[in-house]
Length: 397
Ligand code: PMP
Ligand code: GLU
Image (cartoon, rainbow, N blue to C red):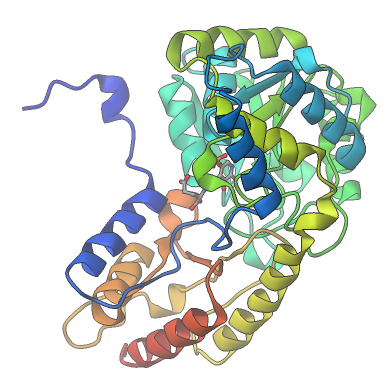
């Protein structure tokens, strides 16, 4: 019998990381696994960013920095917010953390009391619900439809508001659906939220630079929401810097101070060298990294085309991030004579074990009819993966 806390017992293992672990284990056994499970760019960090980190090491930039991040970095983020997003956050309203994952955890731990509700338009990123639970809150899923590009409307959100609602949390571009909310859709949601001044909004914009519409809109720019929006961002996705562990928030001062207080007791500031690298990334002209978005768009179209050749996979056309989230419910109840597919978890395990292609089940993203495909992989691997799964899926009758 284990003695872990009830808090931990309520928590699930990260589904994305679990699938990454299972793929690694099969690879170690010698299988040729194509992992389209973990959401991370397959590009290397750009050279100009790496150079600044090397210089930071040589300059002995190796000490603790202030807990919310060094002031030069927070100034660069403040200017980036203004330049790219038209957001006004002063350096004091910015907290840099060990990845946007920690930023989200800091905010939830700062704001939630036991039983407070957090609205999560589904599908949502796997860690949202678990971070909310860790902070003793209740995640409340708001379902959406693939036929509406997985978008929830203001009216649909409003139906789920109760006196306990504390936060609305969403990502745009969205992980896992790739959905991008337009300015007018976010304005409509804002108009509804004006009636509920006690609800905070966590806007996760980590896929900002992987947006095929060319228009990224930040809900934090809407003046009627002033004092209520926490904008989350980071360098992991847009700058191919997942391992450097730098994420950040812009938030009302009292929330930034609260996050600083938590971080000061849990991790202190993130790595000093990574902060120098992130400063270079923030100062850079975003055009320096746009080549990655262009390549992602080409891959999206390639995979959409491959999916259209597979009977039973229904997909929207995502406008951002590097994921597809097809509905695979067509296969539920089918079998290859040996394995019965009852849900998307079964389908992912079937594909992983039979043809060594890893996806993540939609269950942990709040939509059990779907699977998540990360197309942050080479064209060659994407083509090979879809050739393999087409053969395996045709065996299901
Ligand atoms: N938000 C979303 C929507 C994500 O997909 C991720 C995954 N990396 C994160 C936040 C956290 O990113 P990181 O901790 O690497 O900054
Ligand atoms: N966010 C990425 C994903 O969704 C990385 C894995 C993780 O941090 O959970 O796959």
